[in-house]
Image (tube, rainbow, N blue to C red):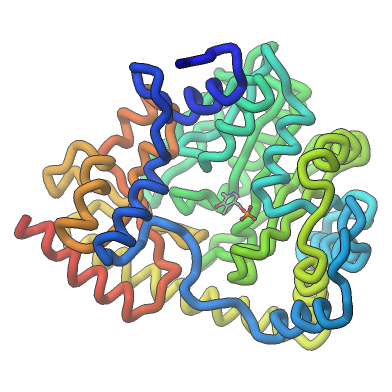
Length: 408
Ligand SMILES: *Cc1c(COP(=O)(O)O)cnc(C)c1O
């Protein structure tokens, strides 16, 4: 039985989970992960580290639990974390942020959902570069609004934003430009020209920019992460979202936050307080200590993490290229997207459903990050996403197994 008037049905439809006969299928992420578990395949599909974050941060969480910080934290987040997030944004990026401009959330995922539920509604549109993180389409559908994808384009050196296409897709119904930099899945880091052009568009068309920056610390070589909120005239119209999960390698802690001007944060708080109210009290304190970083141990951890991720990126990119993929070297995040077309593969989803069994490696198709049945999905049909946030020996093992694609 279908019920097209219900929000869940729109969520299923807009995330590509609705079969033509009206049945709802599972996400390809769940499918591939289950298959990997059943077959004992190496899972390079799901993006979580196989090594935990820093011990000194664990210690703070343990101490907080022992010290009895186990009841509801304030709805806005513990004051220590709001102060730490504000100070981090000021020190690292020169943002003028007060703790009152910070709202702590249950991961970036809740921040994204609360922000879209607060800022858009039926008849309105959210523009997002495609491919996009899967929760964007779901949260937009929950809000009753429409996500309009604008394809990233393959250029020399990686995927880039086509700002003219973004401008052309803007209508009277557009309310939000939903950015993600560093970008999952392509690994693109928006450069100053792209950011300036997006900022100009937002100012000209009076749009709110919502920017998902959960990989803000994970950039390589000379790629530099710049929050669009720091561009002229943007602080008042930008919601900056981040999270401790990717930065500290604690994806299960689900401590995220929103930074924005009072009218926007007030609207988001109104929704957020009825989603979870609050969560993760001892983890909030641990993340606050990590961001404050009085002795530089977090900075040291991050330097080491970036160095090791850069090495693992090279390993995976070179390995995938040797196997025959057209792999794009990412400027940030811990993902590589690679075209399987040179291997004679037209359908990346089919390849991902087969690989755990045929070669013992799991990955996810980039088509899962695209509007179902849209032109972007067609253009990226043969592309696959691999993560390199796994130990080097695991990556070596996986690449050895992928050699089997040649013979297969
Ligand atoms: C992992 C991820 C998130 C979710 O962050 P949580 O803090 O785990 O909720 C959001 N956006 C992108 C692009 C991600 O890769």
